[in-house]
Length: 465
Image 1: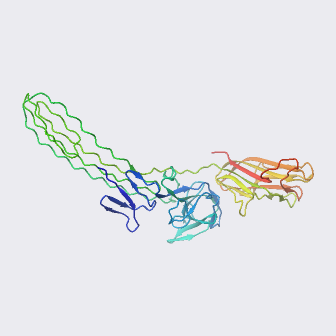
Image 2: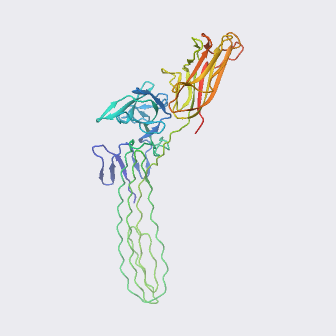
């Protein structure tokens, strides 16, 4: 006999209840999940923690941060809805924030841990920073600049949830900076113990006779289905299994007289599985009955570990002219036309500092710079890469040359390999011996026309592990 276990989410006011064959439980992490022994409804919804595709630079004094380039592919949804996507309102828009280098929480000067809330307007995703102090959620700006990484909530259908979503999320914490632990799932109820079978009566001793034929072995009971384990982080639901009812013990047969074999009564209990055959001189052996095994609960989803990728690369570029006003002076070139394939590299080309490119992780980087000059004959032009954080030119990046003639096209390239710290800001600079030179695209009448004309660009790539 198979029994169905129905799991229903209940409210906080009624955390759990048990009645009949229905077991009710409370699960604040993943609502609307209904499982049975025979299958799982694929249109049920679950909230999972998701790693941001890249980190970003948090600056001292900022109370919020535009992260649209990181979440551009996500669909904004409400916490109260059932549509798949990223909630942008309370309570599900809370995110965990960590230092991108060591994945430890960040704190203010009073020891309060920072966290964030995601909001969405138009096409803009924004993280606003908070601390929890005096029992009140309080907005608070960052007190120091540092590279940041974050973890946010996303609603999935069970049919579309990533296969790695339930691996343990290893957001490491330093001593005394413990992060939030996931909610533990409830332990499944123990199955019902089966009824012990009846002991058969001892048969009378008979005369020794011929040995009887062996009886047929009984059929083995069914093995129940494996129960489903809950997800890590927020622990999932443990399956509830039932123990099967033990079968009846067979009645011992009569001991026969020598030479004569007796017979065994035909027992017809409901759950008989096998009956022993006739005994010889020792009499008839009774039948032994084994009850069928009960059904095991459904196993939950296994979790996956979360690991931050330390790879980093990207490109930023400019497509318009830039006038060098004064001679013998380096100018920061705003790379404000666009960016390509940024991974763990930050560049606000649409913001107030398009000349700045920020690295998330410490390591060894290969950096290249290029500028196209509208040169003046006899006037030296130059380019270099500059570490804004250290206020120093990057060694090996300085390149200079004369143009061939007045107005002649002149392209200067530089490349260097350098060790950078997490959060270092790199700037591409250009200068001239005299003012009025331009970093400008030069296209000759006889030459091909590019799809996108680049006047200046910088590429950066992390080349160590």
